[in-house]
Image (cartoon, rainbow, N blue to C red):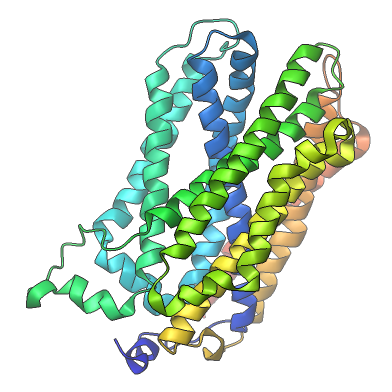
Length: 407
């Protein structure tokens, strides 16, 4: 597959804004998506661990993390749409080819995700009192996590296959015989996949520190539980960081020969330092973890680390597609569409910002209130504004679509 052919596979309509905007947004939204994924995976693991235990603290944590896991799946799905769209916009010759080569799995991705999510809700519905009552059907939660990992592996394969355009014809027509079934997963790197999955241990440790600080002001929380959480989160942080570095080294060691030098780039070094810093920080700060800055800051540090890893991932992809195959995403023809550009940022910053502020404020204040929480007049107005903004967004969406259709 030569460079001219790759350029010929581009969308003739061009892109609606400068490609660098899609690159930046792709990295940022991918990092946010992966943070939600890591929280979901880590929380799910803690749910299974606690559900299979008779220890009171483990079951108490499992009950709390079950709510976190099911919400994190929703957040991960929503946040996963944006980076997927950005990849489709500027890397469409690679992404769509990879999807066609494994089309059966692309369709299966949706079905497997649905079944995995339903199994998690089934477990949730059967275990409302996980802290005090016997666990019902723990296998449903185990199977749910397994299916969600399969979903992650499918996405790993699709993003990995797009990096090898020189292999596409061999995969499509092995030994000269066309295989249009789309049933095969052609290429993957288990070290890379394990690296991203192992990060869930590190990220969920930061989440546990934030959770611990969030509930620490409640009078119904056992101080022994808080101390136990601190020890668990510290251990998970150290172990998770070590495991992630191990798999990260394995990933870098198995890069294609043409990219082997990337393992020694300053970008990789900075990411490794951040992983190590995130892992060691809870041990380093000691009792200061009880302060709000550190209680929530440890999760913030984990988020910064994920953003850096997303940057490294994108730089590596650029080095492969441009450095090895001559494809420059930044010279994609631009057909400026101000409406869609302003629509995106307006939705993200205004509608999303107001609604998210309302949700986070209510969640925060409710968690700090004893008994029944009653929002203030200001918070109620913020909630009403959120509803109005969503309604206006929906109306303008359909009005604009109708206007374009009738022109």
